[in-house]
Image 1 (cartoon, one colour):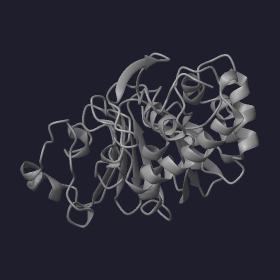
Image 2: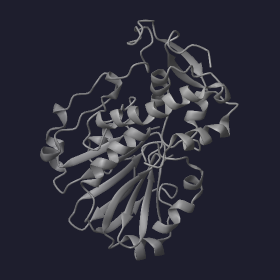
Image 3: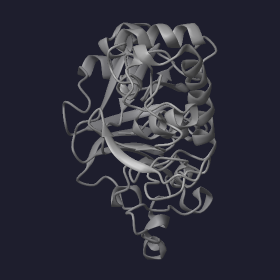
Image 4: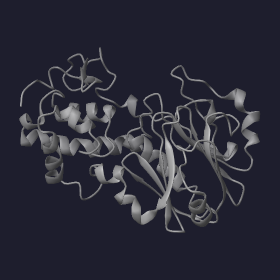
Length: 318
């Protein structure tokens, strides 16, 4: 599943492409992928213009001129692929694409291919669409299209009144955004107290505590703050929590600037793989010397997830 930086890089790209476009038609093949009544589609989607592309936690929100919004959760295998009218130009260059050893794909420059994609790196990002993984197609008045592909059918796209979005269960439960101005140390500590008996890593992974932070950036932030991931929240000192509070947004911003990590799954809105993993200090660095002290990074298991630590920098102390 994508973490905050991966979804944010897709948002940034689509925010440059979608605003001002008018929706002409919508098609879907799977009710759970697009569970909307035909009347809502006819009255509030068809003919609507895109106003803005936003993000809340790991969810993308496309605001429309009808005061409705499309909410999109990519889940594990979702993709969003924006294709110009000249889609076939990509097909003539398909054989020139390089398939990376880790199953990531690079898409040609957007000006040449007229195509932008983000999401799980299957052939759907570079091949002719629609294909067997296509769940929803938005067709715009000028002929351009936005494809929502999802192999495993866990992702979804929903049309809702914009004012109702904060009231849906997901939005009511999700924690504060670590990159917003109102994310203060006080707020951070208060949210962590909800999981005071849990390990600090488990608390960070809980989306009701903090929005958008997953395995990669939890490991990186805990390494930066010199906190062992198994320590219960209630045993972490205030000074260490302050260090963690500073580390989380710093690392997330660095990851966004680097285009995310992809973690073998996610490409940005121009089809370029994220490069954050090349900058990572702990995540997937087992067997490599810690860049801070030289001790070999180890991989353990915490909260059911593979976890990377420096046993010297991140000692089991308060």
